[in-house]
Image 1 (cartoon, rainbow, N blue to C red):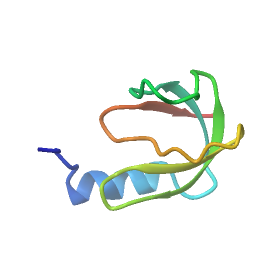
Image 2: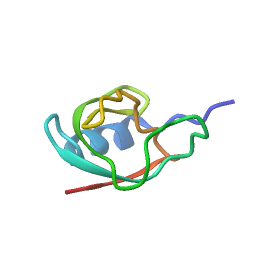
Image 3: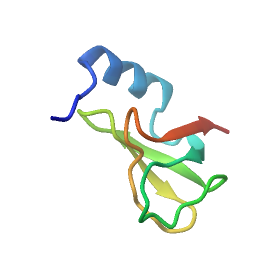
Image 4: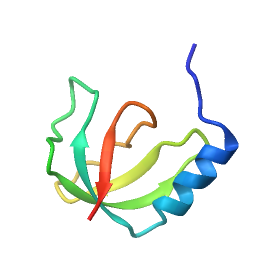
Length: 74
């Protein structure tokens, strides 16, 4: 069973990463992604389960999973 973040956590993520925020990937827990640490992108939105949807500069649209992946603002 998936543990989804609380509504309060999702709201905090939305405040921390509003649309247009530039981010950099620190790590991603996905063995199939071509994204690598240091890749950069722009936040599109945060959905109701805390996934941060990113338009990566490399062309990927892979979301950042809450509690699994690590990003930082740039």
